[in-house]
Image (cartoon, rainbow, N blue to C red; front, side, top):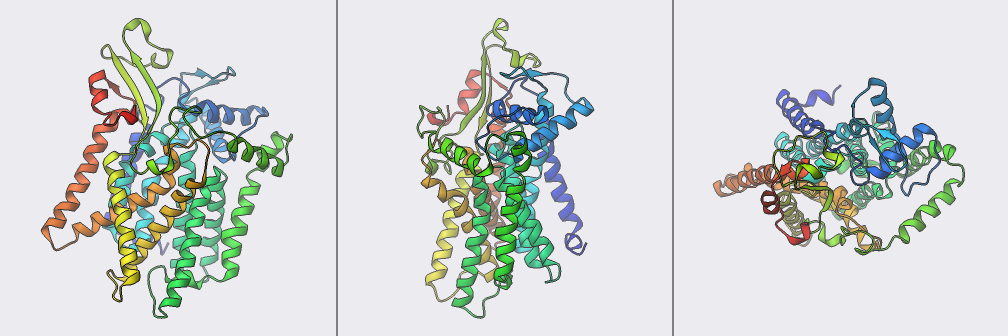
Length: 467
């Protein structure tokens, strides 16, 4: 309760407004396309397999499919969604039923980012901008509106980091509970996909940096100075053993239903599957190189239909009123271009400040602000740079774990500019926010799959690689 009372009424009102905006964008017309979109052909089917006790092989850990299965079960109990689609196995599934859990979980991501920003700085303005930027990102919106698994990685990873930061702010007698909860969520993130390890790796990097900084300056102090208070037993137990046990236990339902392989054999099979997947466009037309993600060079098309006349309306659009012909319905898995391009500059600025401070005798920023920079760099790098070692076909959504921290960096710069005494910097901060909002509204039709004429659609394809 003491933690909750630290927030002002304005803070709660602001965060509630951002949450409601996220919620409305994700739940609006959620069953818009009466078909299995993109990897829903796998995850919705796998979730249904758990409910029907049908054996199957999955190339990822099972947690996201458990949650989608829960969504399907709850939806069937309350009879949510009247339409049904049929996948290759002939299962009747209602789009609303298998998508609503993703929409609900995805709506919390901006709030989690805002809460982390507040924990790091105790500045409501920074928290509002960070949460607002996350609510205005296109890729997170798209991934939240379909039964896909990436949004669960981010949810559990960010929740784990928030709980970890809260544990550092607590007195010693309350810290173990928060640390254990953080460890459980770290394990849950990995139990969605293995790249959830990036959130845990980011904390490991911060622990190393904290130890080095303390050695460099015995008088070192910051909001994260209590990292050095964690004893080795705390780190081993809560950041290694608890995540590992959580990850292992979450496999039990899957293994009981699919006893063909034990846990070790199943992991070998999964690893072999990804190693043999290949890494070029022959595997998938939207494969992209890891270094192109920050610039949103090669986004993904999750759904595309061009309707030229009333005679060729596909079944997926039967429940949609088509205003004119020809018309295009496109769902692009693409970040907000202005926000992502700004975030590249923001992270580059953070790296520049960190290096300058390292070689300078005098600190450029107060120590608390410097730790925000280190936090963002460590977590961005931990979730992004390991992809350079992966040879299989990769997609832009693999950058989602890293871009969260780049967006947080962009919010930090905006907040700093808005609080500057220099008018030109205030103008820079306001301009950046306005451009992010305008870009989101401009590309919103291809996030929500709204009808566009061919000319309107083409105007939104700024790069040939976006098509």
